[in-house]
Image 1 (tube, rainbow, N blue to C red):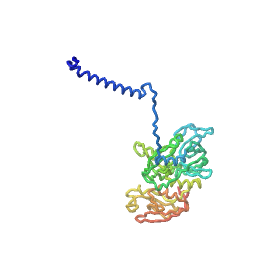
Image 2 (spheres, rainbow, N blue to C red):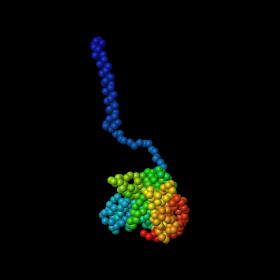
Image 3 (cartoon, helix red, strand yellow):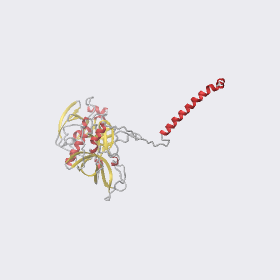
Image 4 (cartoon, one colour):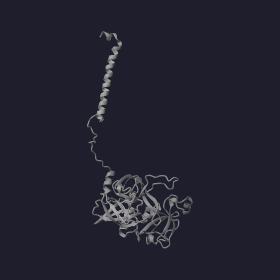
Length: 401
């Protein structure tokens, strides 16, 4: 004791040593605990699954549940060799049978009606084109034989009949005229074929009344009225459903823009898919069921979009400045319904009281009618706004091509 009192070093060193040893022992205990709990020691602890259970029910999941069993895969069989490609096919040499038929292409479809022993599927015409045999794979994975009822190259729609025996769900069409830009849009189908059947993507309605220009099998340029969406649509989705938040079909998916061919470097494009509006679909499939084809009434005019007119063109038309959209009549065909009713440079703005801003709008409105119907046309002849009624006595077959 006398030595500690006489040695200042020992007086402060021994308490410091005691604190230091306590600190080291504490750290060691923590490291050993972490090593053991991390399964570094000889323990039998295992990773476990959380016991928390929850059920997610959103407006989207409800919408998908309502309609998913009505969406099918459409399989197009043709005589093939070991190489084939199709708009809606991502595999090669698949399911080749003894009769030389193999899967040439795959797309999607929607069961929209059930009647007795039959059920009806709508899809795209390009999905079933030149098929020697059609199979429909239902949402449950079972396949049934399909029979083509009718198809239409202009609208790119087709109707297939199948047995209703295993059909449990039929899709409901919405009124596509009431769609709003920005509302949810859900795409359901088989991107890249039936291996990915019942795939769901979600986006919004990006725009309405888009004019999509393409060529049909005869090489004719056609303009289609379409809904634009950013919901992911890929090859194989063609013919599938675009639905609203209630699970009602607002359109049949038909195409997408993948690259901008008009740009200098072919810029890649994302989120630009297109669907045929439900109201147009209903009009076409009713005719396909009844006649196996679509017989369209014709006015007998050549035309152009007013929105594409130059300033000098507008000076020639002499229409009011506030008229910014419509269809310019370039000529009329002798003996057709518009002959002696419409004249060169008339600008059509409404059909049956509804505004028409483009050629595709006019065609969509006109094609809701049948031969023999009457349509009310509102147009400008210079500054004068006029209304006339034209009886649709002729069809597109009567046109001089």
